[in-house]
Every structure is written in C-alpha cells, then in structure tokens.
Length: 85
Length: 502
Image (tube, rainbow over all chains, first blue to last red; front, top):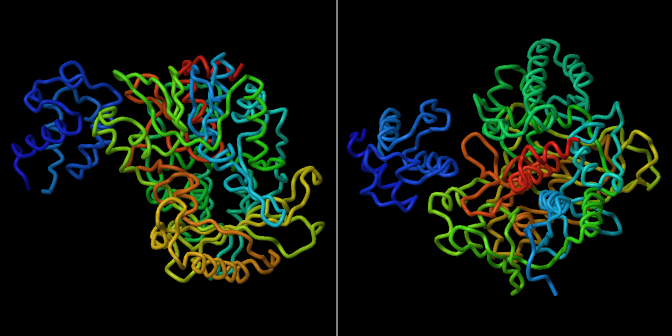
C-alpha cells in the first residue's frame, strides 16, 4: 500500500509529464479547465494516463464525471487505493 | 502535377476516406485524396489470381435495405446508382459446425428465422436466446444509424459505453450450452475483438446489420470503390495514388499542409484515416502532448488472421452453395484464440462469394474463388519479419505449411459441403501489417474494446480530423459511418445528418 502523500506526488508527476505542465501549478485547488487549460479532448487522455500509471479503472467510476480540480483527482485515485507500483 | 492548394486533403482511400471525401466534395469543397498504395480502396480492393477475382476485406454487409443507413448515405452521395446490391437469399444463412459433436446450426440473416433455428437446436435455452436477441434489438433502437429518427450528437457523446458489459458476460449469463455460446459470439469475428474484451453494445451495433438481412455486391468491394471514384471525379476531386504522406505540417496548433511525394499541398482541413499509432510520427515533435501520443501508440490492434485464397475444384456452372459462409467453431466464448503452433485450430471461416445463392438467382456470375480464414497471432508470423514488405528466409515454407494444415482441417470439417480447394495465395499478419497498417496485423484497425479508448474524430490540432475504422466502428458499415461522422465534425454533425436523411 502506498501512502496518500505519495499518490498525490505521483499524480502531479504523471500529469506534469503527460500534459507538459509546470508541477508547481498543479495545486489541489487548480481547476483542470480554467487554471490548467485542459478541455474535453484532454479529459480522455487524462483518464488513460492515470489508469496506466496506477493500474486502476476510472472509466466506469461515476465520480469521474464530477472531477473539476486537482484535489478531485487526488481523492479519486486515493479512493481506489492502488496496490503499489 | 498535383495541386498546391485544396480546401481539404483526405489521407487514405479506404471506405471512410472515400466517404469523407465525397461528403466534403458534395458540400462544395475542393478535395484532394491521397493514397499510399498503387490503387485506391484500402481493404475493399480486389486482386486476381489465376483469373479469379478475390476480395481482400469485403464479404457481405448489412445496412442496404430500403431506408437503411448505408443505402441512404450512398443514395445521398450518388454512388448508389452505380452499385448493384444483391440481397442474399431470404432463407440464406451461414452454417456453424462443431467438430467434436458434429452438430451443424444455420445462422440465418433474419432475427425470426435465427431465433427459431436456435430454439429448435437448443430448446432448453429458449428464454435466454429470446432475451439475448431482444437485447441486441433494444440497444440498436438507441443507435441513430439504425433508428434514423434519432439525433446524432447525444449518441456520439456517450458512444455505446454507458453501463456496458462484455459480450462474454452477457452470453454466459443468457445461455449455458457452450456450443450456443460460441454461435452467439461468432459475429465477433466480423470485428476482431475477443468476446471477453468486446462490449455488448458494440457487438449489438455490428451484429444487428447482419441479423436484419445481409447483402452481397456485384463486383465485390471493388465495385464500391469504383462507384465512389466515379462520383469523386465528377466533383473534380483530385485522387493521387502511390504517394505515401511524409509529413503533416502544423503551425500554432492549426494544420497548414500535407507533404507527400516531396510535394506540399496547403489546406485548411486535413483528414487522416490511417492507423492512429502512425499519426504522431507524421507530425513535428511537440504537435501533440505526450498523453495523446502515448494513448495512440499504446492502442491494441484487432486480431489478425491467416487467410488463404484458393480455387474450388468444381465446374464454373456447378451448383450454387445454399450456405454463404461456413464456420467451424470451438464450444464456448473463446472463439478467437489463435491455434497452437502447427495446428489450424478449431475456428475456421470458409466463404465462396461467387457461388452464393443470391435472391434473384442470376445476377452475379458464378466464380470458383474461395477464401479460408482462421485467427492468427502476431507472434506466429513475427519471427519472419524484417520490416515493411521484407521477410526472413523460411517465410514461404511456413506459409505453405500453414496453408496445407488449414486445408486439411477444412476438408475434415466441411468435406461434405465444400469441393477440394487449390491454394493460390495467402495473407498473414505480416501482409496485413504492411497493407493495412495495423502494428500487429489487425484486420479491423484498433480494438474498440472495453479496456481502451479508441480515438475520436476531433484532435487538438485545429483542422486535423481523424477517420477510419479505428475511430468509430469497424467493417464496411462502421467505416462508412466513421467517414460520415468525420465529415460531420467539419461541416456540422446534425447539419450533415439532416442533409443525408432528407
């Protein structure tokens, strides 16, 4: 089991790399659409990247539709408790 | 000399490229269609061996009945008058056969006849059979391509994903008899996704076309290509063949031009219909974000096949075959596994389009061509791979041995129904990788399965749109609809839907 803080760090790392964003901007309150400039086309890429990184299935999660901020992503991935790397 | 400028450039001349090009040309745009192969048509092309024409990819299709989508689309585009569609015999059917039990079951191109046949063969499963077929029809009533009163956009937004279960799951909860399970799973061979990964909604969308009535076309897939080319030439569309695209130029997030054969053509719209995984390498570094590139590169291909093209040892004017396609299946849902080395496996498909019993009995001349297919893994051919169209020594011998093993199985299984076959040519996973572009020789593009997201038509690059069977659905019908949706993303989805339907 990996700690929540480590999951947050890894979420920031994968999003920064895959979307070429500054990790410093990926604060919990940052909104994906307004603050980070992502759009609906990026949303699927985001799901794919997170599924691959953490070995979880997000596509059928109801809560994926209500994700607005980085904090929402942290909470979603933590709730699925990926079992280590 | 190719033009220097166009309104739209379509890359790839398979059915989705032809469809998009024809729709854009009809909207008044100046279109250039670029094809890397010597002849247009992609998987719809025909080739000849020993004077016999063979279809590479087209065997039969649904959607050509009055007021059905493919016919409506072809009528709108003006290609329909140049195509002679032949409904397969109303009592026509495929035949499923099981080696171990010797049971044969007819698969009619009709919900009612199919249901009756299945219940006769599997009376204890009557309830499950009715539910399963009713579920397919229920799902297809929500698909605008089958229910033309529905708008297109809401369907595409949630494309066949909401609450989806796997085909294997639905089959196994509906019926228990392993042979019946295999029969219900068999149409998965028409889109190349193993039933445990295939979504039931997609399965329904593909299968409904066949269960509602199947059609052959006089002259095969090539006749469709030729009809489109005639219409495109009439609109002034430039068709450039034998010309692989080298680069798609993008500036400030907007597409600028296509470079092919050392020649640059500028355009506001570029439509790419090739394999999605090859797209990033056609653009400059930095055009797409790593997330999208990784997504495209990681896409899993549909299953590949080993295909044998041969000649039936019977007179040209011999009898028509009442059965259209002969299937040998293993019991259970795992019908698409590649055979173990040195064997032909239990899943075989034999089709002789020239000897079909068509409804008017006279239209198509009988021909003795026969095509035999079985699932194949990339690995069994990969040892002979030396890159594009280059093979290691021993490839020819392996192909011949594989063909012999396959024909021995066909004779064992269908010797009572099918005359002896003389092999003329073979297609392997390497052939399909080189001809169709799938990284592992997939014959239906990218898998539209439950564990990955196939790309949609729109991209982050302004003016660059995708099409092809990897983007929406597979096969002739699926790829034609992919072409329609892609043109819709450019012209306006509901606009084009209304135009096509009225």
